[in-house]
Length: 292
Image (tube, rainbow, N blue to C red; front, side, top):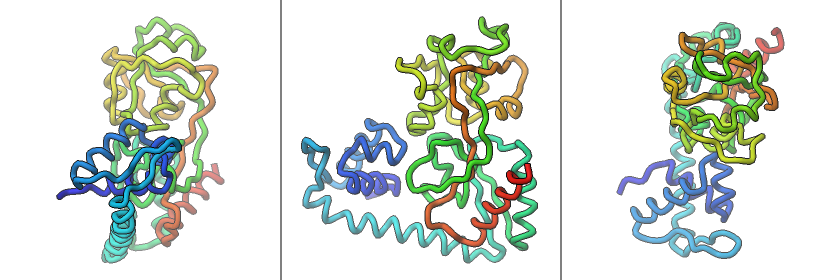
């Protein structure tokens, strides 16, 4: 029987909350997606983990018996990953990222990190938006550059606050405006992040200021997929001002949008992960942003 760590995390989160909706919010996944994964896990196990009650769910006797083992497996896996990384001869800090960082942050922070941690290597890894933690949830990243909001269990330090604008084809009907009220975009097809991105997907669809459901033109899992869809005329996308400069390309234009609060780019790390290399990298970024 092959059970994935993600499924065990889902099981433990629901067991902690005893409510699928609250657990989904904590995990930054949709409630239907979480319910589906729980059913998949129950089919694999051959028994039910939860029973529904008016207030949410309760553990079955079999679910309660399995819970300590699930917690233990997750804790031992996390500890094992940390030990394996610590055993590397030179040491490697793994940095997850979902988009280009730019903004004069990354290069200067890496220079300061190498000065503080001589002999340590750095590995940059691109993480799809189907993992809104940037690889922190499964331990594949030590720190991650990600946009808020983030899943539970992470700590963050905000690096930049930037206005949200819209990227659109150069021949779009609104491209002639200097800035665009968000109300003008409500009926436009949007390029959306995958549903697994949870609250991050909602934020970049503007759900924080709209009451209606957005029109989804296409779903994309990486920045390259997003902007390829825009230049292909499949929809528009909300984008931070700094990312508009980083991803400028022929056939696409950017306009500021009024009526939206800004986006926040942050460095994130797991709660309780106070290893010297993680703290050194965070401190390097604090120095860079303070200097700027």
